[in-house]
Figure 1 (cartoon, protein in one colour):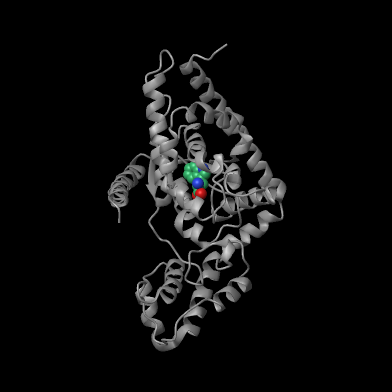
Figure 2: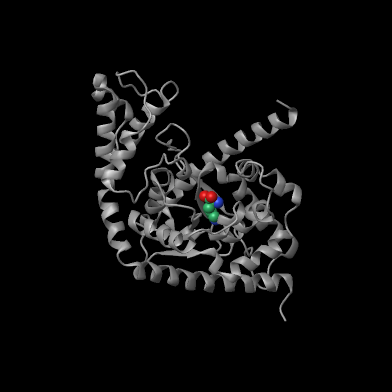
Length: 366
Ligand code: TRP
């Protein structure tokens, strides 16, 4: 390992630990004063949401909202074209994502759901924000690097290089101070804080303002329940190893039937030694809300067949109400579209306000 590499690793381990400690403190604060927080988070509309999304982030968002935290959800449609040539069936995907949000329990009356392409004021923030970052900073971003590597030799697009700045605009246009994300998003959060700080340092505040134009957004790290795909690799739509939130009970059963296991009939929870079997146990554990070890002990010598049966039953049972709601919503696309249109209106109103403050700070008011 080069000095540079080891330096990079140790700093990111230290900053991960720091982010985790901070997240714990924030969680305590949310319980006592939820009104002090505004959450913004979101997803790329590249495919249907799966159980990895559900256990990794969606259910936390619902929980935050239930606690009374104001919630903004960005459907990051521009991020779809950071590393591909077309937008695909984007309208259907945006609608499907919004449908998933509502089906899992996001309250449409208390949340703002919007695709960022429909918010000109948000997108315009990208210009002044770009002036606040350097190309070296952007090129160092480990998540951008990893995403670029995953494209297998595709030239790095300007949008892939700069999307963390656009993501800062997603967060800052509505002055969110809390961003629930997985650890891969920490570099982007750091970039957003740097942008907020530099904006304040360079342009200060419009006359008469007491607080900075942009708050410093903090990450709220998700619990770290990361589940694997049914083949033991990372859960991803393109590998066909996912269980989608919207799948039917039969489709779920079929997928789980094909899941990879091992030849030891005695079922044990051993994530290091038996990743595939343990991942199935983890799924059952999450769905049943009790320890994986306990479930493993009950199965004992029952083998992979029993394990799969239990996983299938517990997932289908847990997701039955969500799926029923999803099916109902899917019958009424006009309703879902209406929620998104209202989200767009509210986001535009907020973006225009923020943009006016930015113009004032830049003295670009004509
Ligand atoms: N980049 C995020 C992802 O791939 C999605 C996203 C877009 C996001 N804008 C955001 C997340 C703003 C948090 C805040 O998952």
